[in-house]
Length: 120
Image (cartoon, rainbow, N blue to C red; front, side, top):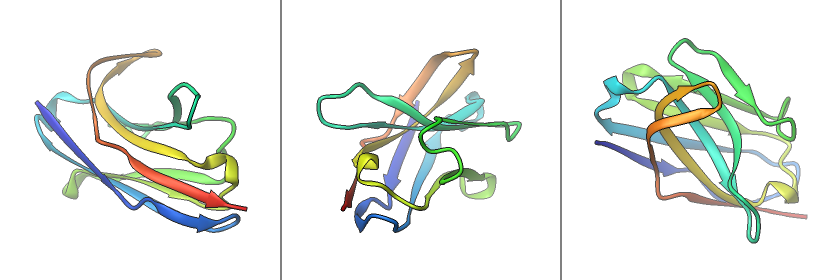
């Protein structure tokens, strides 16, 4: 079992910044990747950024150059630094962690989500 708790969402004006945090607890030894997804109203959940235990990262094209994913192993925490935010970044952001091979997740868990709202 793995528990994930996100924090850091909120309301920000366009062009502003937020940093999301996701603290993992439980069977963290079983994972090889953590990531952030987001889901806007009426849209499918989409990958925002991913980081592996080898520190390889992957970003959605829409956030490349604006968002940075990082992790602190000592704190079992993954961060998402979001800069130059746009109204289209408005969504609920979810943290996930598990085993990722290729494009598929296995035995991954999800946090409860944190709302990010960007006003124009």
